[in-house]
Amino acid sequence: MVDKGQLAATETPLTMVTCYDASFARLCAKAGGLDYVLVGDSMGMVVYGQENTNGVSLRQMMEHVAAVKRGLQNSGEKILPIIIADMPAGTYEFPEEAIDSANKLIEAGAEIVKLEGPVTEVVAALDTEGIRVCGHIGLTPQSIHDYKLQGKTPEDANRLFREAKELELAGVELLVLEMIPRSLAAGITNALKIPTIGIGAGPECSGQVLVLYDLLGLNLKFQPRFLKRFADGELWVEEALRSYRDEVVRRDFPSKENSF
Image 1 (cartoon, rainbow, N blue to C red):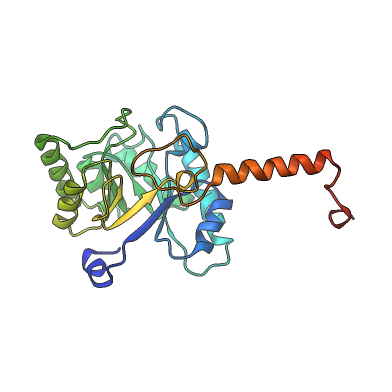
Image 2: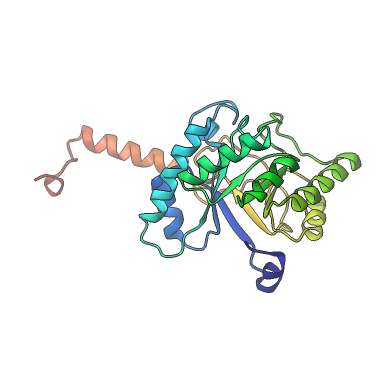
């Protein structure tokens, strides 16, 4: 577990990206320096084309966690990111269910499980079982489908601040802050002893997370304010596919070098 004292000493923010399959997991490992890969239920939208995250099942999560673990292990790298797995909606509504769901994800390869909202009783039960937990407040996609900034009013800001403190007390070791004002995220971060991971929450968080497909620019129509694209993935993939198609049509591929 990375504590705030270590962060203060190194002044190095934590880095997290989502990852859903073995191929990208291998690349995440080979890139080096990533602290966490999050097998997120965002796969429901970016992998399966669903409208929100709520259609993802525990079985799907287990399969994708296992795939990511294999990809990391097959990378040949000695230092690997920690695997965090989202607990799907409806799999942690009471402590006993949450413990069972979390153990299945851990068996598949997760090292930390992530859940959404101020579910302090569930977090405490998981912590008692020795299960590492990441919390998530602000815009929580399993329950909020209107993707707007959260915590804008004093009442909502105070509520989120209180939820953060209560989740820390219950046992989370990380806390994702999504789509909240920068000043609120900074205040929460300064008030906690555990690291915060921001997405649309400003640079004062202890670290940042982005959806891998988004930072690679694989959907140019998706343009939220918080997103920075670090590659033109959609254009690169389209160009590669067109080049492949054209060479096949011209019978340039396969060439002598590609034949036995």
